[in-house]
Picture 1 (cartoon, rainbow, N blue to C red):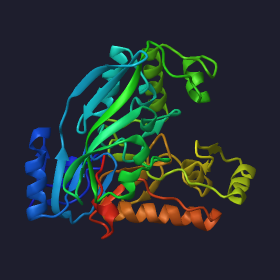
Picture 2 (cartoon, helix red, strand yellow):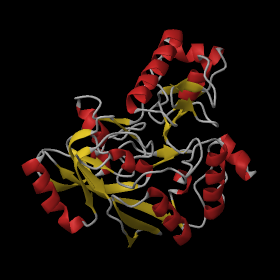
Picture 3 (cartoon, rainbow, N blue to C red):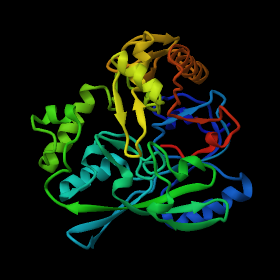
Picture 4 (cartoon, one colour):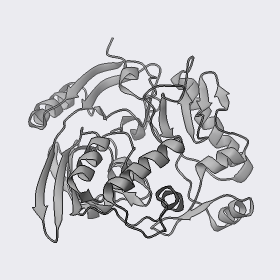
Length: 352
Protein backbone atom coordinates (compact mmCIF):
# COMPACT_ATOMS: atom_id res chain seq x y z
CA UNK A 1 0.00 0.00 0.00
CA UNK A 2 1.39 3.41 -0.98
CA UNK A 3 1.54 6.67 0.91
CA UNK A 4 -1.76 8.42 1.71
CA UNK A 5 -2.45 11.32 -0.61
CA UNK A 6 -4.62 12.88 2.10
CA UNK A 7 -1.35 13.91 3.73
CA UNK A 8 -0.43 15.87 0.58
CA UNK A 9 -3.66 17.81 0.02
CA UNK A 10 -5.25 20.73 1.85
CA UNK A 11 -8.62 18.92 2.06
CA UNK A 12 -6.84 16.03 3.84
CA UNK A 13 -9.02 13.56 1.97
CA UNK A 14 -8.08 10.66 -0.27
CA UNK A 15 -6.50 7.24 -0.26
CA UNK A 16 -2.99 6.10 -1.19
CA UNK A 17 -1.01 6.31 -4.40
CA UNK A 18 0.58 3.14 -5.70
CA UNK A 19 3.88 5.00 -5.52
CA UNK A 20 4.82 8.54 -4.50
CA UNK A 21 8.10 10.29 -5.31
CA UNK A 22 9.27 13.72 -4.21
CA UNK A 23 11.18 15.70 -6.85
CA UNK A 24 13.59 18.25 -5.39
CA UNK A 25 16.33 18.73 -7.99
CA UNK A 26 15.75 19.76 -11.60
CA UNK A 27 18.97 17.97 -12.57
CA UNK A 28 17.36 14.62 -11.73
CA UNK A 29 14.19 15.18 -13.77
CA UNK A 30 15.40 13.06 -16.69
CA UNK A 31 15.90 10.06 -14.40
CA UNK A 32 12.46 10.48 -12.81
CA UNK A 33 10.62 10.98 -16.10
CA UNK A 34 12.30 7.98 -17.73
CA UNK A 35 11.48 5.78 -14.76
CA UNK A 36 7.87 7.00 -14.77
CA UNK A 37 7.38 6.19 -18.44
CA UNK A 38 9.12 2.83 -18.13
CA UNK A 39 7.20 1.58 -15.11
CA UNK A 40 4.01 3.62 -14.71
CA UNK A 41 3.18 5.66 -17.79
CA UNK A 42 2.35 9.34 -17.38
CA UNK A 43 2.23 10.21 -13.65
CA UNK A 44 0.20 12.74 -11.73
CA UNK A 45 2.27 15.71 -10.51
CA UNK A 46 1.22 17.41 -7.27
CA UNK A 47 2.29 20.77 -5.92
CA UNK A 48 0.80 21.68 -2.54
CA UNK A 49 -2.47 19.85 -3.21
CA UNK A 50 -4.52 23.01 -2.65
CA UNK A 51 -6.78 22.47 -5.67
CA UNK A 52 -7.20 18.70 -5.83
CA UNK A 53 -9.82 16.19 -4.71
CA UNK A 54 -8.42 12.65 -4.37
CA UNK A 55 -10.65 9.57 -4.46
CA UNK A 56 -11.19 7.66 -1.22
CA UNK A 57 -9.59 4.66 -2.91
CA UNK A 58 -6.56 6.72 -3.85
CA UNK A 59 -4.78 6.77 -7.19
CA UNK A 60 -3.59 3.57 -8.97
CA UNK A 61 -0.35 4.95 -10.34
CA UNK A 62 2.68 7.11 -9.72
CA UNK A 63 2.35 10.53 -8.08
CA UNK A 64 5.27 12.96 -8.16
CA UNK A 65 5.35 15.72 -5.54
CA UNK A 66 7.00 18.74 -7.17
CA UNK A 67 9.24 20.23 -4.45
CA UNK A 68 11.95 22.01 -6.43
CA UNK A 69 12.70 25.49 -5.08
CA UNK A 70 14.81 28.46 -6.06
CA UNK A 71 14.64 31.96 -7.59
CA UNK A 72 17.07 33.44 -10.12
CA UNK A 73 16.99 37.14 -11.07
CA UNK A 74 18.45 38.72 -14.22
CA UNK A 75 18.36 42.36 -15.28
CA UNK A 76 16.12 43.09 -18.27
CA UNK A 77 15.44 46.16 -20.45
CA UNK A 78 13.59 49.30 -19.35
CA UNK A 79 14.00 48.93 -15.60
CA UNK A 80 12.63 45.40 -15.44
CA UNK A 81 13.95 42.07 -14.20
CA UNK A 82 13.42 38.51 -15.40
CA UNK A 83 12.71 36.21 -12.48
CA UNK A 84 12.98 32.45 -13.06
CA UNK A 85 11.37 30.31 -10.37
CA UNK A 86 11.42 26.54 -9.89
CA UNK A 87 8.00 24.89 -10.21
CA UNK A 88 7.79 23.61 -6.62
CA UNK A 89 8.54 27.01 -5.07
CA UNK A 90 5.58 28.32 -3.03
CA UNK A 91 3.76 31.11 -4.85
CA UNK A 92 3.50 33.00 -1.55
CA UNK A 93 7.26 32.79 -1.12
CA UNK A 94 7.84 34.24 -4.59
CA UNK A 95 5.50 37.16 -3.90
CA UNK A 96 7.13 37.89 -0.56
CA UNK A 97 10.51 37.91 -2.33
CA UNK A 98 9.27 40.21 -5.11
CA UNK A 99 7.73 42.71 -2.70
CA UNK A 100 10.85 42.75 -0.51
CA UNK A 101 13.08 43.33 -3.56
CA UNK A 102 10.86 46.05 -5.03
CA UNK A 103 9.65 44.04 -8.03
CA UNK A 104 6.09 44.96 -9.04
CA UNK A 105 3.60 42.80 -10.93
CA UNK A 106 2.60 40.02 -8.52
CA UNK A 107 1.50 41.91 -5.41
CA UNK A 108 -2.24 41.35 -5.91
CA UNK A 109 -1.73 37.56 -5.95
CA UNK A 110 -0.73 37.69 -2.27
CA UNK A 111 -2.45 35.05 -0.15
CA UNK A 112 -3.10 32.53 -2.95
CA UNK A 113 -1.90 29.05 -1.95
CA UNK A 114 -0.09 26.59 -4.18
CA UNK A 115 3.14 26.46 -6.13
CA UNK A 116 4.59 28.66 -8.85
CA UNK A 117 4.48 25.78 -11.34
CA UNK A 118 0.76 25.33 -10.80
CA UNK A 119 -0.06 29.03 -11.33
CA UNK A 120 0.12 29.01 -15.16
CA UNK A 121 -2.06 25.89 -15.37
CA UNK A 122 -5.19 27.75 -14.30
CA UNK A 123 -3.79 31.22 -14.99
CA UNK A 124 -4.00 32.12 -11.31
CA UNK A 125 -5.31 35.62 -10.74
CA UNK A 126 -6.92 38.06 -8.31
CA UNK A 127 -7.73 41.77 -7.99
CA UNK A 128 -7.15 42.33 -11.70
CA UNK A 129 -3.75 40.62 -11.91
CA UNK A 130 -3.11 37.18 -13.34
CA UNK A 131 0.07 35.21 -13.79
CA UNK A 132 -0.11 35.53 -17.59
CA UNK A 133 0.33 39.32 -17.27
CA UNK A 134 4.00 38.92 -16.39
CA UNK A 135 4.92 35.47 -17.69
CA UNK A 136 7.43 35.58 -20.55
CA UNK A 137 8.17 31.88 -20.80
CA UNK A 138 8.29 28.56 -19.01
CA UNK A 139 10.06 25.24 -19.18
CA UNK A 140 7.90 22.15 -19.36
CA UNK A 141 8.28 18.44 -19.89
CA UNK A 142 6.30 17.09 -22.85
CA UNK A 143 5.27 13.53 -21.97
CA UNK A 144 4.27 12.92 -25.60
CA UNK A 145 7.69 13.66 -27.08
CA UNK A 146 9.59 12.99 -23.81
CA UNK A 147 11.49 16.24 -24.18
CA UNK A 148 12.01 19.35 -22.06
CA UNK A 149 10.71 22.30 -24.07
CA UNK A 150 10.52 26.09 -23.70
CA UNK A 151 6.98 27.47 -24.11
CA UNK A 152 6.30 31.12 -24.97
CA UNK A 153 3.24 33.02 -23.69
CA UNK A 154 1.59 33.10 -27.12
CA UNK A 155 1.55 29.29 -27.10
CA UNK A 156 0.13 28.91 -23.58
CA UNK A 157 -3.49 29.57 -24.63
CA UNK A 158 -4.22 31.57 -21.49
CA UNK A 159 -7.81 32.40 -20.61
CA UNK A 160 -9.96 32.85 -17.53
CA UNK A 161 -8.56 30.26 -15.08
CA UNK A 162 -7.37 28.10 -17.94
CA UNK A 163 -4.44 27.42 -20.25
CA UNK A 164 -2.96 24.93 -22.67
CA UNK A 165 -1.69 22.97 -19.67
CA UNK A 166 -5.13 22.67 -18.12
CA UNK A 167 -6.71 21.72 -21.44
CA UNK A 168 -4.10 18.98 -22.04
CA UNK A 169 -3.15 17.90 -18.51
CA UNK A 170 -1.76 14.50 -19.40
CA UNK A 171 0.80 15.97 -21.78
CA UNK A 172 2.61 18.64 -19.76
CA UNK A 173 4.51 19.07 -16.51
CA UNK A 174 5.80 22.58 -15.80
CA UNK A 175 9.36 22.64 -14.45
CA UNK A 176 10.09 26.37 -14.09
CA UNK A 177 8.48 29.72 -14.85
CA UNK A 178 10.04 33.03 -15.94
CA UNK A 179 8.29 36.32 -15.16
CA UNK A 180 9.20 39.88 -16.17
CA UNK A 181 8.60 42.27 -13.27
CA UNK A 182 9.06 46.04 -12.95
CA UNK A 183 11.59 47.56 -10.61
CA UNK A 184 9.26 49.80 -8.63
CA UNK A 185 8.21 50.57 -5.09
CA UNK A 186 4.65 51.17 -6.36
CA UNK A 187 2.01 48.55 -7.06
CA UNK A 188 -0.06 48.25 -10.20
CA UNK A 189 -3.15 50.50 -10.34
CA UNK A 190 -6.02 49.44 -8.08
CA UNK A 191 -9.04 48.46 -10.19
CA UNK A 192 -11.23 46.66 -7.61
CA UNK A 193 -13.44 48.83 -5.42
CA UNK A 194 -13.24 46.66 -2.29
CA UNK A 195 -9.44 46.80 -2.46
CA UNK A 196 -9.54 50.56 -2.95
CA UNK A 197 -11.79 50.76 0.11
CA UNK A 198 -9.35 48.63 2.12
CA UNK A 199 -6.52 50.97 1.14
CA UNK A 200 -8.68 54.09 1.64
CA UNK A 201 -7.58 55.21 -1.82
CA UNK A 202 -9.46 55.98 -5.04
CA UNK A 203 -9.55 53.57 -7.97
CA UNK A 204 -6.54 53.95 -10.25
CA UNK A 205 -4.14 54.66 -7.37
CA UNK A 206 -0.73 52.98 -7.42
CA UNK A 207 -0.13 52.37 -3.70
CA UNK A 208 3.24 51.52 -2.16
CA UNK A 209 4.14 47.92 -3.01
CA UNK A 210 4.31 46.53 0.52
CA UNK A 211 1.16 48.40 1.56
CA UNK A 212 -0.75 46.99 -1.41
CA UNK A 213 0.33 43.42 -0.65
CA UNK A 214 -0.62 43.77 3.01
CA UNK A 215 -4.02 45.24 2.12
CA UNK A 216 -4.70 42.35 -0.25
CA UNK A 217 -3.81 39.81 2.43
CA UNK A 218 -5.99 41.53 5.01
CA UNK A 219 -8.89 41.83 2.57
CA UNK A 220 -8.60 38.19 1.55
CA UNK A 221 -8.61 37.08 5.20
CA UNK A 222 -11.68 39.16 5.98
CA UNK A 223 -13.53 37.68 3.00
CA UNK A 224 -12.53 34.09 3.73
CA UNK A 225 -10.17 33.89 0.76
CA UNK A 226 -7.09 32.58 2.53
CA UNK A 227 -6.22 29.08 3.68
CA UNK A 228 -6.29 28.98 7.51
CA UNK A 229 -3.68 26.84 9.23
CA UNK A 230 -6.14 25.70 11.91
CA UNK A 231 -9.83 25.88 12.75
CA UNK A 232 -13.06 24.59 11.23
CA UNK A 233 -12.30 26.01 7.77
CA UNK A 234 -8.71 24.75 7.48
CA UNK A 235 -9.54 21.76 5.26
CA UNK A 236 -10.53 23.34 1.97
CA UNK A 237 -9.64 23.99 -1.66
CA UNK A 238 -10.74 27.61 -1.84
CA UNK A 239 -13.45 28.40 -4.39
CA UNK A 240 -15.39 25.25 -5.24
CA UNK A 241 -16.65 26.53 -8.60
CA UNK A 242 -15.47 28.83 -11.36
CA UNK A 243 -17.46 31.99 -11.98
CA UNK A 244 -19.66 30.96 -14.92
CA UNK A 245 -19.74 32.53 -18.36
CA UNK A 246 -23.27 33.82 -19.00
CA UNK A 247 -25.41 34.29 -22.07
CA UNK A 248 -27.01 37.71 -22.51
CA UNK A 249 -30.32 36.28 -21.30
CA UNK A 250 -28.70 34.75 -18.20
CA UNK A 251 -26.87 37.99 -17.47
CA UNK A 252 -30.15 39.93 -17.64
CA UNK A 253 -31.76 37.44 -15.26
CA UNK A 254 -28.89 37.69 -12.77
CA UNK A 255 -28.86 41.48 -12.96
CA UNK A 256 -32.63 41.66 -12.40
CA UNK A 257 -32.23 39.48 -9.30
CA UNK A 258 -29.53 41.77 -7.91
CA UNK A 259 -26.58 39.54 -8.71
CA UNK A 260 -23.12 40.88 -9.64
CA UNK A 261 -21.72 40.66 -13.16
CA UNK A 262 -18.15 41.00 -14.37
CA UNK A 263 -16.81 41.38 -17.90
CA UNK A 264 -13.47 39.65 -18.41
CA UNK A 265 -10.63 40.73 -20.69
CA UNK A 266 -11.90 38.48 -23.48
CA UNK A 267 -15.29 40.24 -23.44
CA UNK A 268 -17.21 37.44 -21.74
CA UNK A 269 -19.79 38.24 -19.08
CA UNK A 270 -19.35 36.19 -15.93
CA UNK A 271 -21.58 35.81 -12.94
CA UNK A 272 -20.62 35.12 -9.35
CA UNK A 273 -20.66 31.43 -8.43
CA UNK A 274 -20.90 32.40 -4.76
CA UNK A 275 -23.94 34.60 -5.38
CA UNK A 276 -25.62 31.80 -7.34
CA UNK A 277 -25.15 29.40 -4.43
CA UNK A 278 -26.68 31.97 -2.10
CA UNK A 279 -29.48 32.53 -4.62
CA UNK A 280 -30.54 28.89 -4.24
CA UNK A 281 -30.53 29.08 -0.45
CA UNK A 282 -27.02 28.41 0.81
CA UNK A 283 -25.03 30.61 3.15
CA UNK A 284 -21.74 30.73 5.10
CA UNK A 285 -21.51 28.02 7.74
CA UNK A 286 -24.30 25.91 6.25
CA UNK A 287 -24.06 22.12 6.61
CA UNK A 288 -24.33 20.57 3.16
CA UNK A 289 -23.70 16.89 3.90
CA UNK A 290 -22.07 14.81 6.65
CA UNK A 291 -18.70 16.47 7.21
CA UNK A 292 -19.16 18.96 4.36
CA UNK A 293 -19.98 22.64 4.99
CA UNK A 294 -19.81 26.08 3.47
CA UNK A 295 -16.99 27.90 5.22
CA UNK A 296 -17.92 30.22 8.06
CA UNK A 297 -16.97 33.28 6.02
CA UNK A 298 -17.85 32.41 2.44
CA UNK A 299 -20.50 30.31 0.73
CA UNK A 300 -18.34 29.48 -2.29
CA UNK A 301 -15.60 27.89 -0.17
CA UNK A 302 -16.65 24.34 0.65
CA UNK A 303 -14.79 22.75 3.56
CA UNK A 304 -14.28 19.26 4.96
CA UNK A 305 -14.72 18.54 8.64
CA UNK A 306 -14.91 15.44 10.80
CA UNK A 307 -16.68 12.60 9.00
CA UNK A 308 -16.11 13.93 5.48
CA UNK A 309 -15.17 11.59 2.66
CA UNK A 310 -14.15 12.35 -0.90
CA UNK A 311 -17.22 10.64 -2.30
CA UNK A 312 -19.50 12.79 -0.12
CA UNK A 313 -17.56 15.94 -0.99
CA UNK A 314 -17.72 15.22 -4.73
CA UNK A 315 -21.42 14.35 -4.55
CA UNK A 316 -22.03 17.64 -2.72
CA UNK A 317 -20.37 19.64 -5.49
CA UNK A 318 -22.52 17.83 -8.06
CA UNK A 319 -25.67 18.50 -6.02
CA UNK A 320 -24.86 22.21 -5.65
CA UNK A 321 -24.27 22.57 -9.39
CA UNK A 322 -27.55 20.75 -10.10
CA UNK A 323 -29.48 23.06 -7.76
CA UNK A 324 -28.10 26.16 -9.46
CA UNK A 325 -28.84 24.76 -12.93
CA UNK A 326 -32.39 23.81 -11.96
CA UNK A 327 -33.08 27.32 -10.67
CA UNK A 328 -31.24 29.39 -13.28
CA UNK A 329 -30.16 27.12 -16.18
CA UNK A 330 -26.60 28.31 -15.44
CA UNK A 331 -23.93 25.63 -15.40
CA UNK A 332 -21.31 25.70 -12.63
CA UNK A 333 -17.96 24.01 -13.28
CA UNK A 334 -16.10 22.60 -10.26
CA UNK A 335 -12.69 24.18 -9.84
CA UNK A 336 -10.68 21.35 -8.22
CA UNK A 337 -8.81 18.69 -10.16
CA UNK A 338 -10.49 15.31 -9.65
CA UNK A 339 -7.84 12.66 -9.06
CA UNK A 340 -8.86 9.02 -9.32
CA UNK A 341 -12.56 9.94 -9.53
CA UNK A 342 -12.87 9.63 -13.30
CA UNK A 343 -11.09 8.03 -16.21
CA UNK A 344 -10.75 11.15 -18.36
CA UNK A 345 -7.58 13.18 -18.69
CA UNK A 346 -8.67 15.68 -16.05
CA UNK A 347 -8.06 13.03 -13.42
CA UNK A 348 -4.37 13.03 -14.34
CA UNK A 349 -3.69 16.74 -14.32
CA UNK A 350 -0.79 18.50 -12.75
CA UNK A 351 -2.40 19.91 -9.62
CA UNK A 352 -1.72 22.83 -7.35
